[in-house]
Image (cartoon, rainbow, N blue to C red):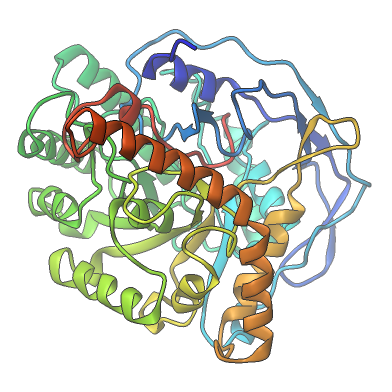
Length: 460
């Protein structure tokens, strides 16, 4: 099989457009029924044999978020979709009152904003989310129409209706196309313009936090790449007023920037306004990059290292994902909570770590299942259940029979997938050994490594 280029993979990943079905009524944070025109996500998606799930696009077993950002203006062709309708008025879960938890944990998922950013709020309430991520515009192209006044008005109205704090618990995700480390002048301008447009949309919507991937060195030194990223951030900060840009840690593949805490530190050090920059930790990325979170001791050590290298004051958000791939593999394969190599204990540590209270915690876990007809169906109930699972861990005794039983159940559920990925990793290591190498080390360019990445669960 001929491997696709990173550009084509990014285009294919970005081509998926989520379908919606209208819902007449939804329940807000208070539990009261309200009429709404928002569209709830319930999508049945046709996928190719090479792609495991729309939530988690893959290339030869590798995800596609840590690829070097694409530099192409051409949008990929749209893929045909079918939809599975949900009964009118059906909610998959009601929102938990955060004040009722022993720790203030705001948990949600990356939901669709298809049809308008205002629809993301209804989609978040649909799964019982107290925080959520979204894309602010199409991910299939470099330029998009301006934010519609009606969408902005409805977004603000629904924020009030459903009691979400846009300053704290909404976390837009940046475009995969953007590479702020780009050295080419024309491409750097293209990336900056797209990035700035997102920040301006955030400010129009009253959103404070904005998460993005740092970028790729493109073969330059890491120092040069970090310098270019910081310069673009300084420029964007001067052109805006309030939005805080969050660097996401990455998994350590190819030339991608941000897999080491030191790289995040070096970028922040060059940012003029330190109040306008922060970090979002992705648990799967961290684990794949060699930061262990599996045991209380390992979690404490990693958090202490982050504090020492970067500083806890810069930690502003989390992406909660288990990992199908083993520790330090530099492969970014998201797994459902408790079913991967991280395991449920890692997420128990996060849910009970006091300094993390109040941060937006966003799931990007796989939500696809096979339907009765053999076709792939997006099941948002998975996110609704994972949110409740994570909330149940707050204050739970990790030595209790309840926790041990759930841990064992989820571990068994993901065993076959973990074994499959472990075999792939072992096979690659054996192949590298025969070549007389130690594998593709961090910072050494590899086409396969650069095409390795994850996804948020939404492409448009």
